[in-house]
Image 1: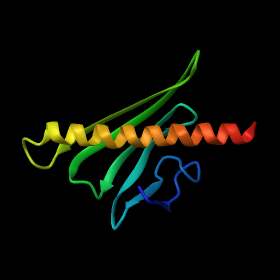
Image 2: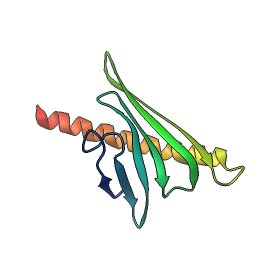
Image 3: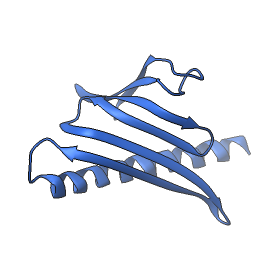
Image 4: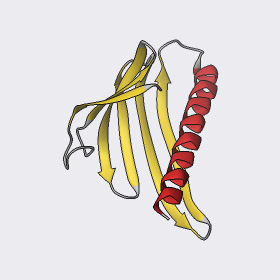
Amino acid sequence: MTRTYLLREGEPPPDGVGALRRFALGPGGSQEEVVAWEPPRHLAYVVVRGLPVRNYRADVLLEDDSTGTVVTWRCSVEPLVPGTGAALRLLLRRIVRGFAVRVCRYADRVLLDET
């Protein structure tokens, strides 16, 4: 992901339910709409454009534990092309895992800067 844009604010502003975001990756990317927003524990979104899939929904859950925060990122999706489910699962797992790692690194840097 190289750029992000907020195309429409949600409720509550800016990132609540109904927010529409564009995630750019070079000339491509996706648009995602927030369908659940329960800070600071839960975010859910659906892909509305830009990925070759149907019915993509992801739920991101944050839970405290004794060593920090456990991030659970679950998604469901239907491939457009029959028989490509396994390849799609591997690709999405790699993308989501990489994104989650980068978010955690960013959060660690922000926390270190605050101390």
